[in-house]
Length: 158
Image 1 (tube, rainbow, N blue to C red):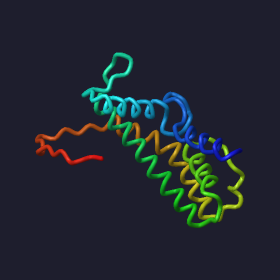
Image 2: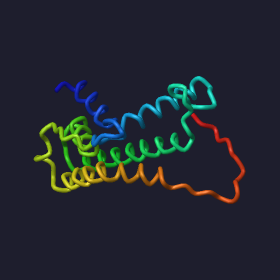
Image 3: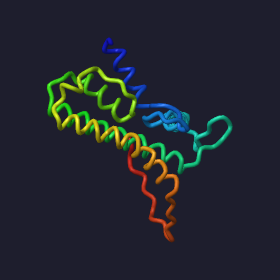
């Protein structure tokens, strides 16, 4: 594969498949919800709407949490894998994202990785399959209501 193809494939693997399927990744719905959140913010709209329906704030927060946890996990795994090997960063990124998203694609470097890097990939495969479902389910089911509200703050963003 050319580097451009490998980079695009890595991005598509990270996004993954549909929410009702067995595909890995952060899921297409999570990706599009975040896209619509960005679009609403750019337009200055107070609500996020898709297809004539308003998306609840709790769903927006779930999507953001799932995506940021996935980005953090993949980024740390890429850095750790690159620290123990001298392989090209794009190939390492491809392998790590493929493991996290449980895609099954490889650039063929897995056998050349040191054992600790292979353990990282195995852990990613497990977390990517079980973890993303567990995190999404836990976030969807967990609701906590406080009896009080703290003062609101508006920090400068950007």
